Figure 1 (cartoon, rainbow over the protein chains, first blue to last red):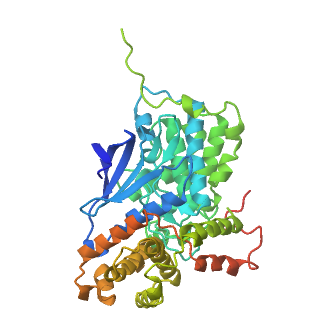
Figure 2 (figure 1 turned 90 degrees about the vertical axis):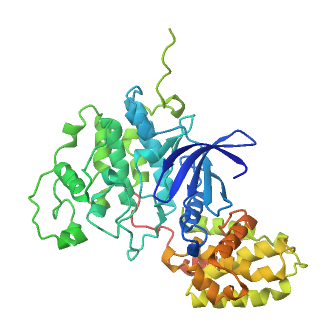
Figure 3 (figure 1 turned 180 degrees about the vertical axis):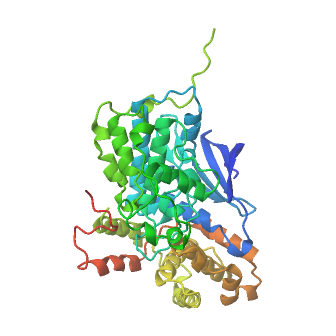
Length: 313
Length: 164
């Protein structure tokens, strides 16, 4: 701790607080995450060690870099990351920042590259949302928020908790209480973020409850049936449900994303698919013609990350 | 990444973590190492930890005691137990990690006056000795690779999605 100056608190999670700090010797800005004291009968924080494990295994241009870790005198673990200036959430909410089609292409491309790196190393992120996409000053997107991430060997007997994922980015199989979801679950969240970039508002905004979120999804993609999702009937929620859901047909995404180019909609349609086994993987999505078609993605250095300073008179 | 890349990466890490070059024939723990390892193995067995977890904890211990002759013999047991606890947190599922009071009882550290609080200080000390670098690859990890050779074909992937 003696090597850093804490400047301000940035946020607070269930298990940790994050701060903006400065390395005393170099004046380098950093983000610091301090894990809240747990019961001392557990010793050094398990979650902190697992995050160190994942991040040291996942070194990649688009994954946040861990620069240091230490314990405070009161035995709390602090992880120190490179400092990111803004997040996609802040960019989307700032109406003074224009977002062109080539900009969108670069944002989603960087997310897919990060996702491909995670999935290739058998890591599920499970908390993709615009708040976890951070940007360095040079426009490089850095994926963060590996609190819920885990190694996944893809074995069918590995059970995963349906408690992960933020509601609006939660895939239908997880909402249906599947414990056997896989990398395709992250891809659903990627699709939701892609849609949000185009709409400039969250795409599927359920209200507080998981049922409301499922309802939103089914109203757009149709209710699951034998042909659009053959395995849905064995998911816990479908299996236990006694209330028949009146069948609804899917609506066309072209009618929702009227301003988006055809190749973008084509990619979106191949990612946001009810049946997880039919979603594109991150590496397949990166080979979609959308990325080789004109216009090319905006060079990341040219992305606008904050509103222009007010013009001097 | 296919299994061969994985193997090469493991091989490199294996020799990096506790490099043969740092072997020091004068380290004072060497004549007791056999007993320490035996003892760590039996603790691993009582908590039903994977063998690989104990192998990792022995690598941690070697890395520390090879280079730090100044650590007095009374502390070896604490350090060895902290190595086991940290290796479990790094390698095992959360629900398989030993609860510290149980670990203190089984390791008899509680008889020596240790509590959960002092043990956590021991764990932190070990993390500092290791520079917080816990990615050790013991030989037992590489054995898994050899086991799978001949069962897997070059075109097999780790997971279902075959590239289109």
